[in-house]
Amino acid sequence: MVTATDWLLTELSGVEMSTAMYGSSKAKWILGVGAVASLVLLVALMSWLRPAIPKEVSILSGPEGSQSHRWANRYADYVQEHGIRAQVVTTDGAGEVLEELAHSDGPVVAFLLSGAEREVPGGQAPAGLESLGSLYFQPLWIFLAKHAGITDIADLAGKRIAAGPPESDATATSRAILEAYGLTDQVVTKPFENLEPSEAADALLEGRIDVAFFASDLGDDSIMRPLSADGIEPLSAEHVEAFSRLHPNVGQLLIPEGLFDLEHMIPREDVRVIAPAMNLVAPQDLHPALVDLFLDAARKLHGGRSLLTERGTFPSEDYTSIPMNPDATRYYENGPSGLRKWLPFWLATLVDRLVVYVLPVLLVAWTVFKAIPMLVGLRITVAFGQIYKRLKKIELASDDEAQRTQLLIELDKIEAETTRLRVGPRHLAPYFELRQNIHDMRTRLIEGEPKMTSANSF
Image (cartoon, rainbow, N blue to C red; front, side, top):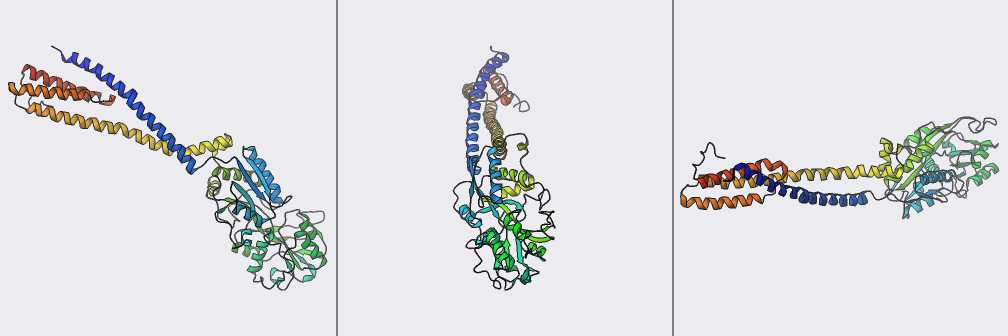
């Protein structure tokens, strides 16, 4: 007679083989398919939500030799140091910059003075244009002929004014100033509207105009000439703070006496000026990694002190007239990724993308894989329950000779079904308990032993 111990050892070896096959083939197959599916999903998400970093970017600046052109070249050098080709494209001014941005078909950023978009048709920037922040002030100087009898902006009524060429950096702010003081229709601008800064300076010196608005770079000849010339003086605006509050895209600056030349005391007295700010702007689809890279450059190039500002004034979310880029806002709030301190730009960016998109995918995949054993366990528990119900019927059946044969046939069927069960390691104990119960019941049926009482029954 086969003992329970012998039977258990035989069954153990068979189930171990079945379990090993299940663990090494079925489980690995499920894990492999899940891993491949997760990888495909991850690649698709990264490509759709955050495409690969562009290899090239264009930088739009003002005319060659202008301050924005010089800065654009320094930005291009910084970007190229980090493995991205940069091409500086010169323009005639704000109007052409906005035109180029409206028709760009590749990654592009541009230097644009705050408020300049008001000079294009419709008075608004192209749809989808966003600011990465302001970089530096470009003061708007108002120069007067001394004989004009002007002491404040309100005195400009009836005067001959050169407000800057159409779509130039000076025009938008100068028009905003005239409008704020109600002088738009009370000044004479023709035929002076197309005078370049150097021509306007000559016209002032020759007495052909009374006032000229200049938004030129510090140290530019068009500024230094009238500052040092006899018969011309800069106007120190009295209501600069009020204007800057009404127009948040501009700042206010006090230019101290002698700031540009102490030996010759230029300027000759303190001058309070309205100062629009140069912004870095780009289409809204600019890759987030490029946003971070250009703002890294902005912090390095503009974060220190200058003649006009203290350390930390720029780059800034202030002094902008175009909506802020959301990735730029995040940069100003949280700073650059800490990985940039230890990893190359391309690697830090890759890791950042992985953190943003891989971790959620892995979390979902982990949840799914954790659920698989639970579902398998539920299936096995249900199967065990159904088998025990059938054993219970056998247990309660009448124990006559005629019925015994049918009960053994049914018990053989149950045992055959249990051998086909795929059982994982954590369910081996209840599995063998079930098999032992089947074995014990067969022994009792064959030997004709009395059935177990309900108290001892399984």
